[in-house]
Length: 83
Image 1 (tube, rainbow, N blue to C red):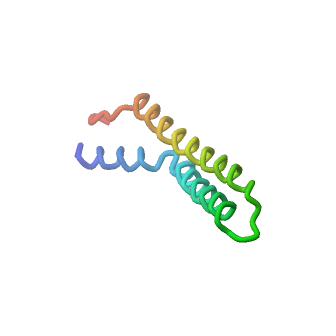
Image 2 (cartoon, rainbow, N blue to C red):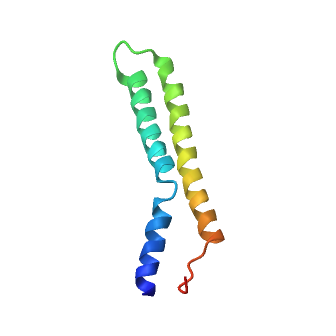
């Protein structure tokens, strides 16, 4: 029984802040595309490199927020096999 309860706990823990984590991945991808277009695409302004870098940083901030929030939830709600 405790193995099944632990699997449920782990899957619930992994599901927390998943949308924030996915938004961070998407922001990083969009930032890289904007930065590369500003650097290598003909006709695109070169100043697009800096907003692209800013979007990448926002994406990393979202990823870090998801990781630390998940860790804080895990510390506040540790696994208890008796539940």
